[in-house]
Image (cartoon, rainbow, N blue to C red):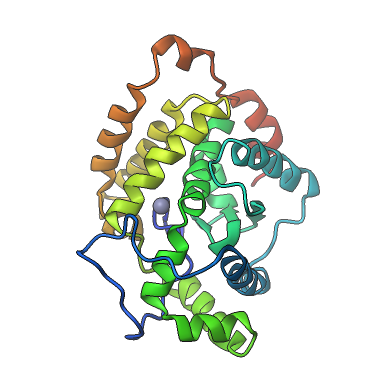
Amino acid sequence: MKRYFTFGLCSICLLLSTGCATFEQGGGFLGGINLLSTSEEVQLGQRFATEVEKQETVHPDAALQAYVRDIGARLAGAAPRQDITYTFTVIDAPDTINAFALPGGYTYYYTGLMQLCESEAELAAVMAHEIAHVAARHHGEMMTRQLGMELISDIIVGEKQSRAAAIVTQLFSTGVAARYSRVQEREADHLGMDILYRAGYQPEAMITFMQKLLAYDQQRGGGRGLPIFATHPTPEERVQLLQSLMQQYSPEMRQQRQIGADRYQAQVLSKLP
Ligand SMILES: [Zn+2]
């Protein structure tokens, strides 16, 4: 049984929002407060990454990791933010449909999600969306809002590693992360499609992957019990948004971009159970 679905719910961060600081302004966070410098964001991300890699199983296949890293490097090269190092790690968990980005550019992809993809372009679509959250500096806004600067500072200096561990544990046990705002999700879809396209992949892949998630839910009774379906915008709204975004690229230009189904079969699907 698949654990949880989180394309678009991809944040590890914000679970223990127990009433720390709130910095909401006007209900939106676009251009909102980001109190984290890049170096603070990277240090905070490192603390969480340490916990993620303790609590989850990094996939042992070096060739598989390298393949995903190469796709990531290609996408990251097309990202507008270049002051951090993006990293890409496969977690061995065939029952988990999940992907997320930590602050500072650490991103993770579960084998359960990778098995749902049918091409390199579809995995790249998920990766581009995660990169976009980092590139648009969504974590700084979200984490200062959810955790508060005091706790963030304590985690960064290493005084609250147990708290960082608890935040990660809670994410994995409940699958319910606090969310990016609606505006941030739209921005990640918009920027993610641009990254995907400029890296040479067909932007349609972002839509076909969302449709696969919806079909997967249908097969399971359409219960919408999984976290992705609790987010806003809804998957249907996101498919609509993505379809309208795709119109900015001509059909001829899209056709020239890659899908990479055979390569994905050989490098990923043939290796997974
Ligand atoms: Zn997202």
